[in-house]
Amino acid sequence: MGSHQTFKKQLNIMMKKGIKFFELEKTRRIIESATHLEISWAYEDIVFVEHTAFLIRFDRENTHKIYCYFNTDCPKTESLFIFKQLVKAADVEGMIIINSGTFSLSDSKKKEEIQIKFHEIVGV
Image 1 (cartoon, rainbow, N blue to C red):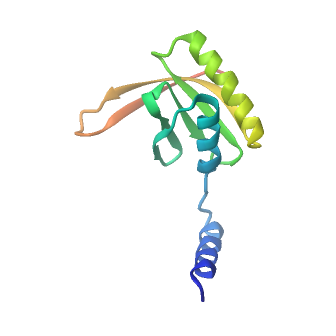
Image 2 (image 1 turned 180 degrees about the vertical axis):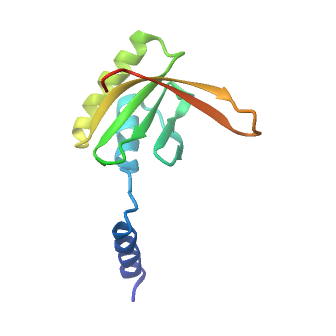
């Protein structure tokens, strides 16, 4: 069995077990197209973007829906401009992006960890 067939077989097994795959590549293209920024790190369902002006959180049920949170330090006028650009780029990729609120980062008491506090918009 070739490596491509082995990969497809393993992928099918993982999908049958309920393992979710997020649209990371589409999300990367959305971010790059809209902002010319790159993904600096992806962890579970969260995508960190260069300079942390905003981050993306994947919807665990709908793989074509993503949530955008802006850093509390990002000025409102800039976040609105960036979000409009993200919406346009998401539409091109067949994705839905929702402005879900803000977030703040703080150091954790544990070494080399950060804490993310989400400030959700009510009703989203």
